[in-house]
Image: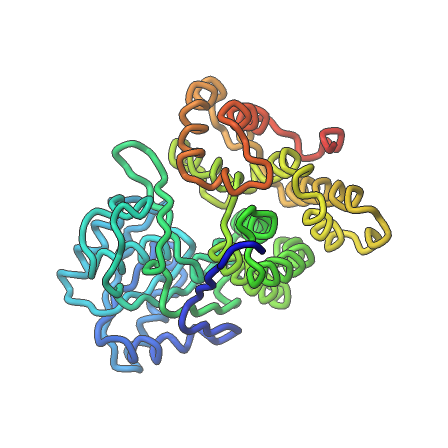
Amino acid sequence: MKNFATFRSPQTINYGQKAFKTVGKEASLRGKKALIISDNVMNDLGYVSECRDYLVRADVESVAYLGVKSEPTDEYVAQGLEKFQKEKCDVIISLGGGSCIDTAKAIAVLGTNGGYIGDYMGEKKIAARKPIAHIAIPTTAGTGSEATDATIITNTSNDVKMMIKQPAFMPEVAIVDPALSASSPKSVTAATGVDALSHAIEAYISRRAHPMADRLALSAMELIVHNLKPAYEDGKNMNAREAMSLGALQAGMAFSNSSVCLVHGMSRPIGALFHVPHGFSNAMLLPAVLEFSKEACIERLADLGRFFESETTNLSDTEAANVAVIAVKKLCLDLNIPNLKGWGIDKDLFVNVTSKMATDALASGSPQNNPRVPTQKEIEELYQGCYDYQFSDESKVR
């Protein structure tokens, strides 16, 4: 690589089955009263009460904010922060998917630095003060948010997903227990799994690729390629769940220290305007964007192709890269990933906002990290092509 690069990660990562039990000890080292950021699904599954039991055993009080109902918004952040301050908490625990973790990241920073979360977008405001200690506990194997210094928060006044990245947003502790992901429905396993794969791929092909992140991205791709379908087909397959949790964690660390690219840049506006969960929108876009980008990253996509098919060891890089694109399309097909039309998005409405989505995607900065940097027009054309994209059509591979 040509330029200096920094590598960041949580101070502590507790990984493996039964890691959830360490939340009490980790919280007791950082505070006396915890605010648990979660949702009603996690509460109904009993994970919130289990978390509170572990805290009680460590002499840590707790209250819960369960208002996260969808992709994280500035309203959730404001509500959670208000509860944190009213209850006089001093440590934050996020328990759930990426939405809960991203909401908690924002609250942790605002708790000591103040202001509106949108102030921190594009580093207009720097979080100079140490954030509230944040312990992140993912219950899906996908976002990798437990190990990134970025948060995605929707501005509800203009329907823009704000991508905010600063060191202060990194959780202090990540607790990754694969057993927690066993409760994920098949559709969530599929979407979050492809989301994790897109993190690893984009970190690896990024124009800002990081040598340490490269090794994590490669490991993540290999783990996900071989274990996503088994985890999807049998949610109780703990070997596959464990591999997916590790892969998602590694993928999160990889893209946090390099970058995401065009998939994520295009995904955020879809989520903001049509309320498609982040994992699904990434999965809907990944195959088409890989087709678009392929010629600019042949060698690196070839590495991905060789994970999918061991026979590709004797193929040229171009042939192996083709295998990668075809295999990702087939994976999405096997996982029943819908296209935008299949999700139920109205075509006329979608076409009418294509220009805005392309503008918002470019404004995020992520497309500029893509190996093939797109124009506004090319992004608009990609959106239109993705609307009724056929994952099974191998003729599009070129």
